[in-house]
Each structure stands twice: as C-alpha cells, then as structure tokens.
Length: 470
Ligand SMILES: Cc1cc2nc3c(=O)[nH]c(=O)nc-3n(C[C@H](O)[C@H](O)[C@H](O)COP(=O)(O)OP(=O)(O)OC[C@H]3O[C@@H](n4cnc5c(N)ncnc54)[C@H](O)[C@@H]3O)c2cc1C
Image: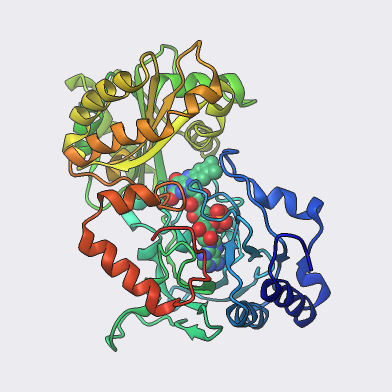
C-alpha cells in the first residue's frame, strides 16, 4: 500500500491501472510535475495517479471505478484556469489532452463537434477551414481547451457581439459522476423538451461530471475586420467612446489598457512596439466586423474622427493591413504575460454595471490603498462587457511574499466595493478554490442552497472536483 492512502483508495488505484491501457495513466512524478502547478504559480498540487484517457469510453471506465472506490477526481484541460480549480490536492488527476478529435463540422447547420481536449485555437482553425467562425477568443487560446472553456464559461474579447462560452454551445456529451454518459450532442436550435441539461455543465468547473465533447455553434465568417487603437485620457472617455462605437451590430471588441500595460509589453515581450508617437494615459482597442474594407474604413474614420473633434480621443491608429491589425492585438494579448516580471500582484476579475465603472475605480483605489498603502492598481480588459481585470501590484519596496499574504484582506476590500456597486466577484475566470469562501459568504443564500442541491443530486459521493465552487 502506498503511504498516505487507505486500503480502498489504494485498491481503487490498482483497479484503475489494470482497467485502462498502459499509455492512459502514469505515476511518473517527472511527467506529472508540470500539471501540478498553474500559470500564475499560485497553486501547487499533488496526485497519486494521472489519467490520460483516449476516448469517452476510457473516461467512463475511469469514473465508474472512482465512484465505486470513492476516489476523488480533478479534471484538467489546458491548465490555463486562473482560480486553482484544475490543480489536484491528492485527488486523481484526469487530463483530457488525448480527447483531441474534431468529430464533425457541418457548415449547413453551423455546428462543429469537438472533443473536450481540443484547443480553442484548433477549433477556430477548423471552423475557418469550413468557411465559418467560432468566435470565442482568449489570449490563452493556443493552450486552453474546449472542455475547460465550457466548464469555466469563458468570456474573452468577443463577448460584446457573440456572448460567453455558454452562448456558443448546442449541447455537450459528459460522463456523470456515477459513470453514466449524458449525450446532449445536437445541432438543433430549437428543442423544448424540458430542462436544458447541457447548460448545467457550463460554468460547473468540473463539479458535475467530465465534459468529453461539445457541439459548438459556428457563425458566418465576417468579410472584413476593421481594427483601431486609440489613445485616451480616462475611463469615462472610454465609456463615452464605446457608446459612439456601437454602429448597428458591427462592434465586436472594445478592450482597454493602461499606459503602464503598454510599457510592460514593450519592455518584456520581444518584437512589440508602441504604435503611437506620444504616450497616453489609457488606450482602447476596437474591432468592427463589416462587409468590406471600404465600409470598415468609413465607420472607423467617421466614428473616430468625430471622437477626436469632441476631445474623447487624443490620437488614433487605424489598421490598414492584417499585419498591422495583428500587431495591435498582440499588445492586448500579452498584457497578462508582461505583468509577470514587474512584481507580485493580487488579481481580481470583476464585472460592474458599465455606467458605474469610473466611480468604482475611484472608490476601489481608496479601498486598496487603505489595505496596503503604496500598492499600485492596474486595470485592463473587456470594458465593453463591464469586465475589469483589476490587478493590484505590490508597493515598490515590499517583499513579494509579505505582500501576497494580503490576498484575503485585499479581496475583502475589493469585493466589498464590488458589492456596493452591484457587481460580480467573478466575471469570467470562475470560482475555483480561490473564491469559494467569498462566494459562500457573499452570494444569495438561496442561490447557494440551489447550487449545493444540484451538486448533491448529480454527485452524492462528492467525487467530482470536490474542493471547488460549492
Ligand atoms: C494569458 C491568459 C489569458 C486568459 N484570458 C482569459 C479571458 O480573456 N477570458 C476568460 O474567460 N479566461 C481567460 N483565461 C483563463 C483560462 O484560459 C480560461 O478559464 C479557460 O477557459 C480554461 O481552459 P483550460 O482548458 O485551460 O481549463 P483548465 O485550466 O484545465 O481547467 C479549468 C477548470 O475547468 C475544469 N475542467 C477542465 N476541463 C474539463 C472538462 N473536460 N470537463 C469538466 N471540467 C473540466 C477544471 O477542473 C477546472 O475547474 C486566461 C488565462 C490565461 C493564462
């Protein structure tokens, strides 16, 4: 028997190993190590066994055995989650990386069925090859997986036009905690036959079962994307500009970045350069999806020209080619990576009713300064959705670890302000391990009771990702 595990767990692990093909599991600590730490180096895990099932049948076999032996499971996709939900702490780790097939693409029904471990980028490319668009778009898209995207109800840069991950799904296939397979793969846009069970898995963070495949909604390819980056003075001006940018259904992205973010990207990411001659306190990155390049240029020139005259915008770069558009996007996509060398930060992913964001920023500034004097707030992200990534950097001369000890009191301070502004403590990253206590404390008690009742119905033995969400 392995030290640290009781008899049933050890027997269960042996049963798992003998039931699955040799290449579908490993105990090699060297192989497992990279899967036990997440992107921000905030959570470090431990597992007795890592499973890498090749198909839904193998997932079913593994889950049934775990259920019989009361073995707890943590599912992991691309390991880009930012709230610790994919990192095991003695549970069995189940990787979906070998569930990597695109099962079908149907341009006629605008549906694509992908297995859970297919990366978001691979889905986007498969859709494009079929003359369609899958609009979910995150800076982590080369690594994150469809299973992870749906389980976290990911957002990203095109929510403004297309919604979050849950708006982009017809249905899912999932292995339930007792090993049964729920088959919700469909491409029907209308199906009023009771509760929409597939949706229960969206945003469930692996607590109700393992998504093994999903039928995703595709869209027509936009003929032209017109991208513009503008320099602005403050968030209030950005909000006014956002309003001007809503031209019919064309607006697809409206992201904001502070000057500090542009400086960090230029300093730390090779090949990045400032597209402006002068520095500006804030920047907005805007996309319109339109019929052709003339239409794109005409919208950009008229909207931004008027905003320049009104004084809402200080300067503008209108992308004239795909390369230029892609270089502008890179500045936004590297915003998280470029922060890493700058120092420790306590990170929040919040939504505020959009018209209250400028006031929120003022009140939150006071609250974080009161908690750790000299700290440096750094806000960026999906302003068009009211979603701010509000990161608070350590004061210049403070020890990194000493600063990070303030995570709980900083959370308390920021979340109190979020509550005052009727916002949400998690806009898109989910609850995971990180915000579980905050959710329990701050959410409507009836909501918590309902979440727990659903969890208990599906997973009475609490074997599926037992430490996250509820
Ligand atoms: C640089 C960077 C930028 C990011 N930008 C954004 C952004 O703009 N918007 C956004 O929403 N997020 C963003 N994220 C967060 C992250 O990429 C998303 O949460 C993503 O959806 C996670 O996918 P994943 O495959 O990496 O999941 P993982 O990290 O592996 O897992 C995340 C959660 O889902 C569960 N899970 C994973 N696969 C399954 C499955 N098949 N079945 C059941 N449960 C499963 C895990 O147990 C865990 O709880 C970013 C992350 C990084 C590092």
